[in-house]
Image: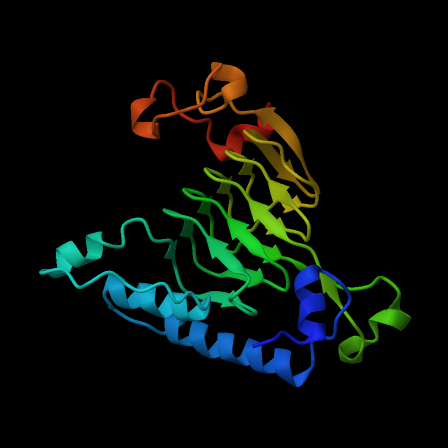
Length: 239
């Protein structure tokens, strides 16, 4: 099915109108889907995965049922884990990697694409705003005027603290850390801690995963490199 010109503009990050019947219906579909997910209680990992894939319109077939509930749950060990409740505008513009954890009360204004890389951890009450509006109030014009957006990309192995806000157009490099309560307005380099409002660079992260520090690409996993504990996020701004 061909996309309307208005929806194509939305996906490209150009000015478009959000309150057309097409896009209102798509947001309503997504709301019904995440409401079912948020209200799910004591369901299997399979069923929760199925419900969330419906939210983001991922039609990847589920693996065949295993012989026991425990074995069946293990089939989904690499799927993202999203703690309800969650709020998402469209769903189809959200892409999550393997072993991603999203804590409760997260918000995704996915006017444009939002990607979160594998093994990234997201604290509670984190908001990802790919949507934005014109500054000129004459152009903005409430629900009758156009809006726009910019893609958000979160790399692999990142950690985003609770109550952080990620604004349109931001890219967070691999291994980046965002302090709790921060408002991220600019790109974050790989293996860097940022914090504050607006978020600013606090320090570089020492890790064998960074080829610039180790001299070679990291081929292991965290359990293979455990010397020294992470500095608690609450103390990262003290440096």
